[in-house]
Length: 310
Image (cartoon, rainbow, N blue to C red; front, side):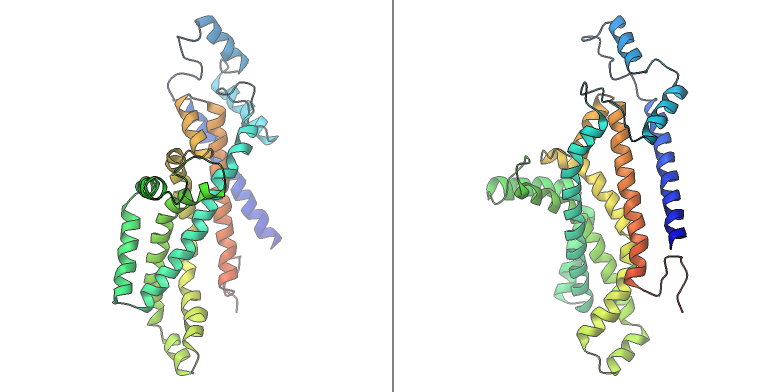
C-alpha cells in the first residue's frame, strides 16, 4: 500500500514538473512582455522593469530560478498587480472556482446516474427517448450557451436566481448548473450503455431466478458493475469543468481562477499564468489519483496494485 502511494506520488510530481517546464518555455513564444506598452513606459523604464523582475536574463537562467522558487512553494510575484504574490492571488481565487466545480461534478454525476438508470430500466419507452434526447442536447450544446439562456430566463426574466456577481451561496447555483450539463449528459449516456449490456448477462438472470428482489438486483449487481467504466470518466469530466470555468466565470462574473487566467493571458502576466496552470494541473492529477482509489472501493475484486483478488 505504501509503495503504491509513493509510486503514484512520484508520477504526479514528475508530471507536474513536465507541465511546468513546457508551459514556461511556451510562454517565451508569446509576443512582447508584461511591460511592452509604449504609452506608459519609455525604453529606459522598460529596461529597469525587466531588470527588476529578471526578465533580461537568459531564458535558461529564468527557468532555473523559477523552478528553484517553486520547490520552496513560492510561485513568484504578479506583474499585473504590483506588490502582490501569485500565492496570495490564487488563495483568493481558488475558493469560488473549487466550489462551483465541485458542485457541478457532484450534481452532474448524480443527475446523470439517475437519468441513465431510468433510461436503461425503461428501454425503448418514452422515458428512455426523453433521457437520450436530454443527453444528446447536453453533449451537443456548449455549456456557455446554457449559461446565457439560464442567465436571461431564470435570472433576468423570472428573477428566481441572481443573474451574475458573487455575493452569497445563491450566486453559485446557476454557474454550477451550467457546468454540470456536460457531466449529466456524459454520465447518463455511459450508464445507459453499460447497464443495457449488463442486463443481458447470465448472472443477472441467475440472480432473478433465485428470487432476489428487483431493487437488490438493480443496485447490487447491475448498477455496481455498470458504474465502474463511468468512474473512468471523472478525470476527463473534471478537465471539461475546469476548461468550462474559463468562460462560465466570465459570464457570471465569478471571481475565480478562470477569470484570473483570462486577464493574465491578455497582459502577459507570466507568473500568474504559470500559477493557474500549475493549479489546474494539480487538481486534474489529484482527480485521476482519486479515480484509481475509487476502483477498489466500488469493486473489491480490483486491487490498487492492478491485480485481481482471488
